[in-house]
Image (cartoon, rainbow, N blue to C red; front, side, top):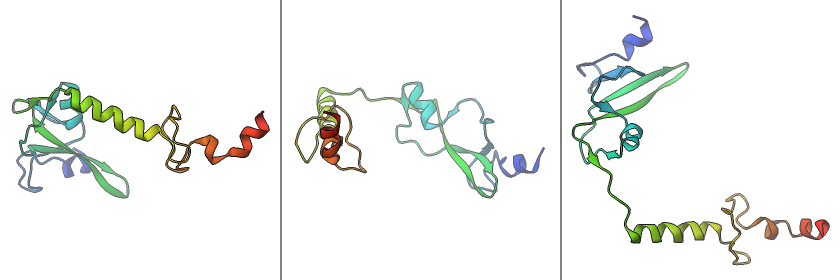
Length: 127
């Protein structure tokens, strides 16, 4: 067992407080948030059941928290109100505050306005 593997292996949680496993070595029945979401599940208020550590050179390790799959609950379905709120939020991200038009793309935060408003001279040259 290499030194980095040994630092990340604490299945009882005696050393690190919660059960800890090396990267890609989590036992069956545990999943990360992304893995739960891919299965159509959510943690559902359960506490963190463990963690997976990936050591890195000269930096702290990457941490992924594990949840028990048997205690996970199904994802709540989107309601029509949530879909409507999401559509309005996306419209607000596409609306230029300068000219007030829907740009058809998300306004870059670096510009703060649509490209034609940010660079009006470029339109005259192209024409």
